[in-house]
Every structure is written in C-alpha cells, then in structure tokens.
Amino acid sequence: MSKSLSGKVIIVSGASKRLGRCYVMACAKAGARVVALARTMGEDPKEFGTLAEVQAAGRAEGLDVTARRCDVTEEDSVRGAVEETAREFGGVDGIINNAVYGGGGRMRDRGITRADWDGAFDINLRAAYLLIDAARPHMEARGGGSVVNITSLAAGKAGKGGGAHRGLLLYGMTKAALNRLTKWYAAELEPANIAVNAISPGDVSVYMRLVNGIGADVPDHEVVAGEQVDERFWGDPVVWLAGARPAQVSGEVLHTYTFGESWGPARKAPPQWSPEIEKILGRDNLKAR
Image (cartoon, rainbow, N blue to C red; front, side):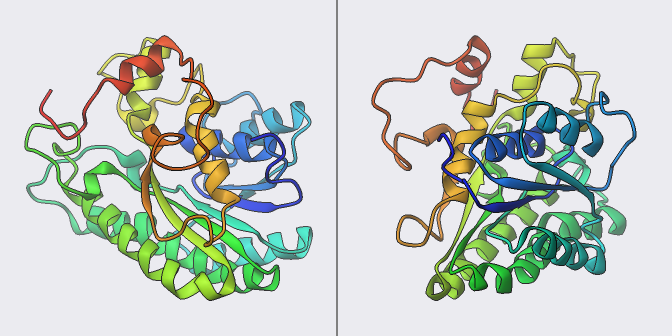
C-alpha cells in the first residue's frame, strides 16, 4: 500500500475518531493529501475524538492531514467544505463516506422518534449523497476518482439474536439504502472513470473494547480513548478502494474481513494479525451469540 495514493486528494467524513481517524491516517500514509471532516474540532491536540487530535497526530508523523469542521447535516457546510478543498489543493480525487448517526449505536425498535429517524437518514444517507454530488465535478475534471461508502452487515439478512440484528433496525435500513446509492452511482459514474463501492468494516467496537479493556457500561459511540483502530487491518482495504477505478472494481458491497482473499490484491502469505484481530475474525455477526 506504500504511497499508492501519492498526489491524490481524499476527503474523509466522520474523521474525528474510530474508523474515520483510521482511514485518515491510512490514506495519508499511502501518500494522499487528506482532508478530515467532522463536527468536533476541539482545541486540545491530545484529546481523542476531535479533529484537533487527528490533525496533530498526522502532522507529527509528517503526514499531509488537514482538519476542517463540517456539519454533514447542513448542505451548505458540505458543499463549502468540498469547494474549499478543491480550491486549496487543486481538486478532489476521492471521498470516503464514514460519517454515521449516533456512532452507529444500537437503539430500540419500538417507538423510534422522528428525530432519530430523520437524523439517521440525514447523516447515514443524505450526507453521502451530498458529498458525492459536490465532489463529482471535481473528480470528473481530474479524469476519474473513487467513492468509498462505509456500510454494514446490518444492511442485509440478519438472524434474530445475531450481532447484526438487535437494535439495528433503523441503522440497517439506512445502510441498505446506502448500498443502493452505491450501485446507482457506480453505473452513473463509470463513464467518468469514477469507481463507487461500499465496504462493511465489522466489529470495530469489539476490537476497541478488547485492546482498551472497556466494559459494556460504556456506549459504543464513547469508545474512542486509548489504543486506536488497527490501521493495517481496517485501513488497507479502504486505501486500495480509494485508489481503484471502475476497470478494477465498482458497484460492489465488500467486507473488510475478506480483503486479499475474495477481492483486492492477493496476499502472498497468510497475514499475522494481533490477538485482538484474531478474536473478532472468529465472530459471525449474522448468528446468535
């Protein structure tokens, strides 16, 4: 993956923590100029969960990371962030749509409020549409590009009692719609040499709980402190997709866990994962636990 995105300008939404932070760092280490978007800028460069920390951490490693506050529920904010990025860096080559409502946390299926319903669809779906729509002319002007939408197994079939079922009705619906958005845009943008794919990351919260010793009393969206997400495991697949074009792959809904096996560059040797990664690889989100 070394320098595979050299010279590319990549925008990552939901970039202040967890997977978003991971994708920013991974793309920057692959040579990209990365613009990290989120609502929480923060002031302390050591405070995990803020754009200030992401930018400071990236630049401390000599990476080209620029933090930009953006509220993805506000159309003007989204379009403004994209236009500002294009002006400052000369264009846009890729979008990673990672922003998620409520951290992707579980919520009851009875009595879903209108605020939660609208909020989930605004952030998990409309925000992705707005970023694609705003970046599209800039990617076309560059002769191609890539869109990576972060989806979930909860978008598909999930057995009752399984990890992808309980509390994920609303979240799963938005991700199913995101998958459809992915396939529509893949067909629409293929003539412009723009690849559009979706990728499901899997048990990020479980991993972070394992490495940090965080108990069930802490909600998923608050699991941000301490050891951060494994950049090689979660970052490499997204880096590869961010550099892909339709001739390689487009219109696919993929899974992080199968990168290098059923898609992406074939591995020359079995990967040596950390004990925490090995533990989550043995989980099946579709079956009861």
